[in-house]
Length: 336
Ligand SMILES: Nc1nc2c(ncn2[C@@H]2O[C@H](COP(=O)(O)OP(=O)(O)OP(=O)(O)O)[C@@H](O)[C@H]2O)c(=O)[nH]1
Ligand SMILES: [Mg+2]
Image 1 (cartoon, rainbow, N blue to C red):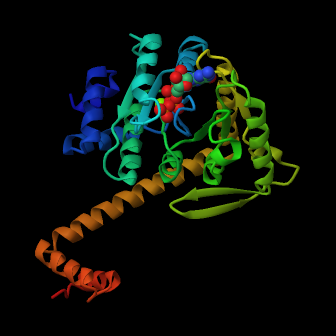
Image 2: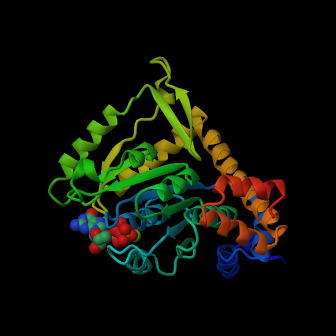
Image 3: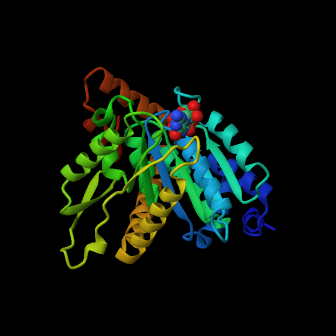
């Protein structure tokens, strides 16, 4: 039996092994990914992002519990914790311990922490591959936790069908804490730590920002390109999704059911509006483009002696050539 076949038959050890192969980008991992790909496309990918320490791991933990214990039939849940090395709480290490206690021994929950190494782009690519493995292995929901702010969230959000942006009261005070780009990728806004004072004013601030954002069009972003989709008129309001704001107390589980309901509604909205297919397409397009670049660059570079590149580079450093001229020479194959 191949590794991929073992995974399709539900072998958990094989799954663990393949995840390592995929993270290390081995040939065996790649072959298995190819074999598994036709079995993907069923899972609901949910990105969970937000500032450090807002309670993302706790929330993911509560959602996993909800899908295991409160839903009939229970759903199979995979968690990918990307860049768990948050300086704030020690990140997913702590979260993992919490999760392990609550979900220990449940074979239908799989938690994978991914070390952050290599470029952010590489991380997004590896996360995509890991998500594909879980998808093929039959996990219904794949929760992807990312920490930090900026490009990495956007890239991971491009992976997800539904993106949750988690805020907490009192972190850098409301509006400042919410980067415009982050708000743009949110399908659902979560105000966690609602047991603390200031949750209502955080919610109000978010609401104001959402209303300021022009509701007359939707923006699909990927790889820096923006595709504007004209907003529907009033006769078809179901095609426009306005991100709901949900208050939660992840340390106690309060609000988890409401959050799960919002996630469900978003999935239904994506399917009825055609956005599900559009996101799938955009996601796979990004993946194909990234692979194409990777393959072309590495093929190109392997055909040029290292010495030649070194020489050009020193000329650039000495300001004899501009980076553009150096690249032109390399591409023309006339570097001397
Ligand atoms: N009071 C309160 N504390 C919470 C709540 N949710 C999480 N916490 C606490 O906040 C701290 C951070 O929680 P995590 O779930 O690790 O947060 P995180 O966003 O995953 O953190 P990083 O991954 O480090 O960015 C922990 O001490 C949690 O116990 C909440 O709803 N209320
Ligand atoms: Mg965390």
